[in-house]
Length: 414
Image (cartoon, rainbow, N blue to C red; front, side, top):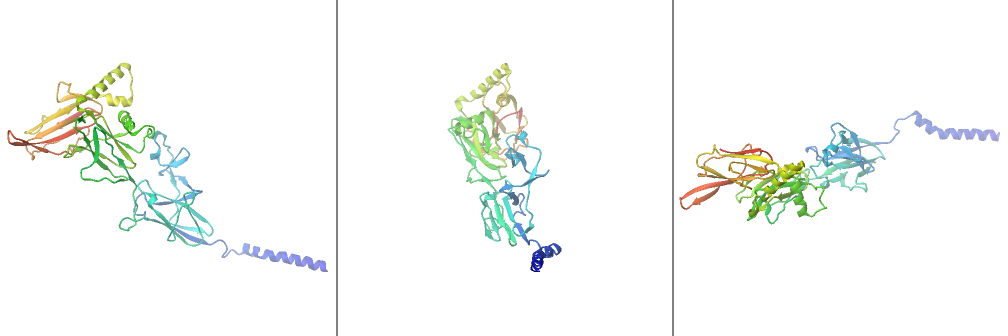
């Protein structure tokens, strides 16, 4: 009897312990983990390329294939195509980072992990991330994490000088160089700080007394070249000026001090201005002669190198003053004067010419244009008065510089 009662009690005990499980299985109302709202906000809705909150796993941003995506997978990581040196290496398949939605339901006890990214235009390092109004820091994996046990608002705070929500653009330095032969300066009466992403930067080049700009070449190197760190600055600039590796700039005008004016457009990296080809006035023409000799030697040997061809090629230049208004005269200044015809001559690649135009009245309209390079005749220059004590008359002269000639060129004065 006692044994029977013990068995019954044992069965009853087991049954009682299983009742909650059966109840949970049979009635799911109110069961499960509670969900909380996780909201992401940033002052980026009014800015193209603004902040994004992207999902991360162990500090790594998650990506998905996307035909319209901005990223590619190259050398074992995701990156923007602009960060790949050789355009031929850019893969075709595109990806986008996986973003958190503005509003999300997340189960209690989950961890939300993310990074804050933005386009190259803006500086993500100037932003502060807040969680429910309290500033937070990245963890050792350079990501933000938050444990979900309540409704959470994640926001980015960044403000302009007026206290208004804003995105602060990246800014870059433009290094201006100078040598014994020249000075690279900011525009007159302007003080240079930095240049913001996508903006342009204007500067001027002054050739020192005793030197000629007839063969001068002005370039900009964006970012860092492959030779940076291997050579000192002077040697690096000389090699860059000789074999290329930088973007050649064309002067858009001359200021009242006779300095050539230049503009670097769409700045997206630190930049450096490089000037080469400035010669002592007594040696003007020697470099052109040497380039011509080099051209003859290479042609004789049948050797063709792209960068050498660019600086040793011959180009025809014609200065047409037949349509110049009455009272307008001009003078052509070039690095060599060995050609017989003063208005038609040849130059080697990269050389330039200067044209001094003189008119007898400040009100007289005159335009100087050249193709290619100044097809619209918008080259900016200053008309400098000159008083002749013998005749008692005042004339006005302006300088037009046709730099870095790299094609047959026609200059027209009308």
